[in-house]
Length: 594
Image (cartoon, rainbow, N blue to C red; front, side, top):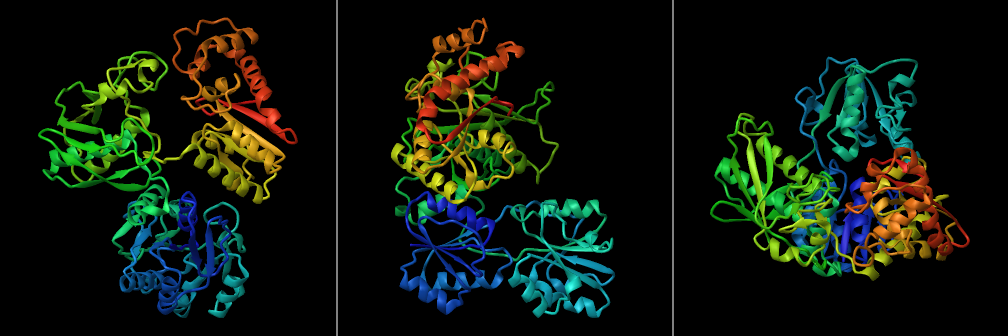
């Protein structure tokens, strides 16, 4: 059993990660005021001292703890560490992502270091800090406290000595709303912030304070030391899989893009620092960092692909990176990425890069560049450009068992991966996860549920429905038909289906499961839809449906969209007989057609 300490954004993310396992767990908060939905978790509320926490862990057979509490909850972190040591229960710290400390801000270790030469201070450090700031008032500094607009927070603030006219409240979206600007036109000379990380809106608050010309004081976050620390959902899942393997029926893995990035990092560190670490930190596209094992050969570093329990022909392959200085004067790039043995070559148009380019997708290239810039930044900017050559010794052989030959990628595999992590799901488990998400969406009371294939399409469609709660957006992956059937079973009346063209042309032909193993792009059918829209064009050379956006006449795009959506409706609307279905077609730039 797992015990999570939350009440934060990280706590909410931890719940999302653990819910994927379908196993029971406990979620603990101090006040019980966080609005959160648990399906497999059981909520416990109220502060736990060391004795109570120890007793609970023993009674409930807790085998793993996750500390996702606020970084400034020092007493709780200390208690968790003590119980963890006494009962020998491993603990994962779910940390926030923190930007580099801006030297132009005034950093302090504790409240006693606040400068005394300010006149008015806006404190955004929470209701618990009021007692620690009262001494400033006796020194002639006017202090305003911005707190949450909860009855419990207001009552505690007054109990700690704050006056009514000193209280400001969080409201709306502006980082400094509810501040002094709303109180008789007064402005604070300075603002006191906690180093609360990206999820705490730290950068937004700093920028807003700078715009107001305020002096910015920042209370440094306390050190939190646990053996296992993560700063994102993928890292948390991988840590749970390692420490409590049975919690997840299926385990996650790494993409070839992450493996290539890890190998490139390791090879660069060896070239520049002459060090060979056994694992390296890899920053994923979502900003979190995971540790990835690496190894070394004579002139390369490598990473072995682990696919977890996802059925993948690339599982176990070795991805290598050779890194050398590039001394050509014509090169203006600081990081040059090349494809070597076993990495396929693009031979047809329609991909992120032109024919002749190595089949290393955009996301892995960006991962490599982002991570190597991080490695290089503390060293020197005067280094010669680096040439990174990615190779896969078994790539040519394995590629024959993939769709690469059909897509016009020859000579090897593709280096791919948008998230950097492979999350495995059997078809049954994936559909069950959709059902859970749809159930949560229904329970949220939202007037509409918006289903999308993934994060990219969801990001585009969200702009159309800014007032819908997060729970109203559900990913269907490839299972459009099953998702619509679930919507009908749950009596969801209004559904919006966001779909990109690659899946839409399959759906329009009646393929309610758009996975490439179940359905492929049918050029004959696409040509029939083009003719139906009054468009005459040669599509014999296209390899991906998204190429249609650029090839067809701009003035005829809406006509084609109308035909595609009409065909999609033919197969989708019967699955939602008592509801209203809106289908949105999305292009690669995020433009939405309906």
